[in-house]
Image (cartoon, rainbow, N blue to C red; front, side, top):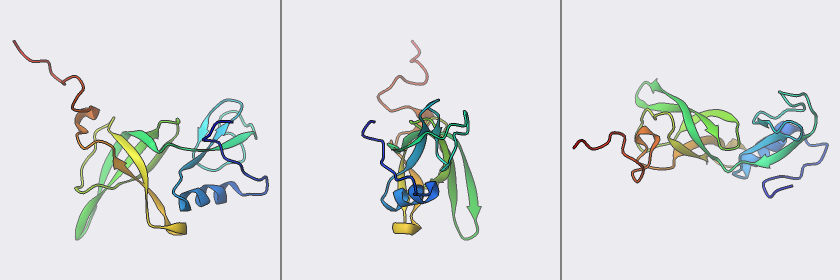
Length: 148
């Protein structure tokens, strides 16, 4: 068992354990001991192989955007919704919290965070790097090579 695994008693409901994690500022997920599938939604059976042997783990909260869209709101700035594939292998949809609303390109790196406290805490994502154009960092190879 690695340091991201969590101890859970058999009588704890999976949904309760996930919600308790959010209240503590953690993003928790289940990993199947048989097929290694990562599952975000709390389950009693693996969605892939049907195994009941699921281990709770803490996510690092880091991932990449695989889709984004803006939802306009009358009288307010639009909300940016993102679909994020986390480094552990599962995906989740949430809001992007940013100082300016933006359409975020596929591949931009994000980090998990929370809005609110305790039982009312809701998961959100923040950009990891302010220079997220084309999903590359400024120090990486340029998009177009210099012309000679």
